[in-house]
Image (cartoon, rainbow, N blue to C red; front, side, top):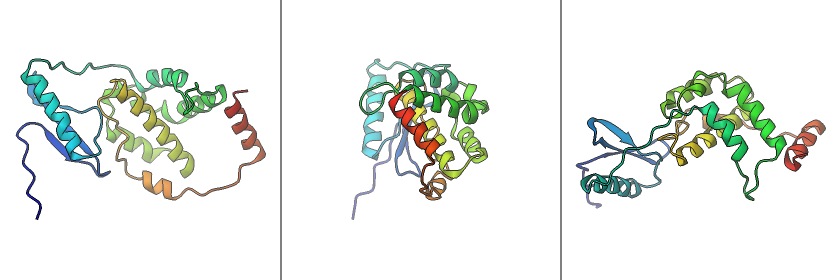
Length: 198
């Protein structure tokens, strides 16, 4: 029989529906508030180690508060489009940038949260937007996954403390409803243009 897990005396860890773990700790400037890790962890020991490092920094007077940004999704996405690289390390082709830009302008930028500071966007904002997204299931999932990728980049650059697109209900349902269909000649031409950048 496994020994019971020792209860933490500082910081807290929560298991998310995805099976990953979220960690947070009391803000040294105001212990009534909590600072949440800017990422989720694959295992509980990873989350424990992250909290132990933050605790050591506070004890040794090395801790620095996270830098908060007021950059909005719209502002960051404009930069993301110009600097995003593919798996080969190349900047996105002009055709691909154009497709993403159209996607953002038609389906994302009109949302109220898109003009808010990214660190203030909550899963609730994303859930409401996703539920109201008017497009086919395959396209809906594609738009959502692109937005999630943008937020992941923002977290890595410390512009957001956590990705609000994690554990959104209905994403799996949309994924399950995808059907493979043949591309029309026009779609093939558009994909060729996007790939070749011509």
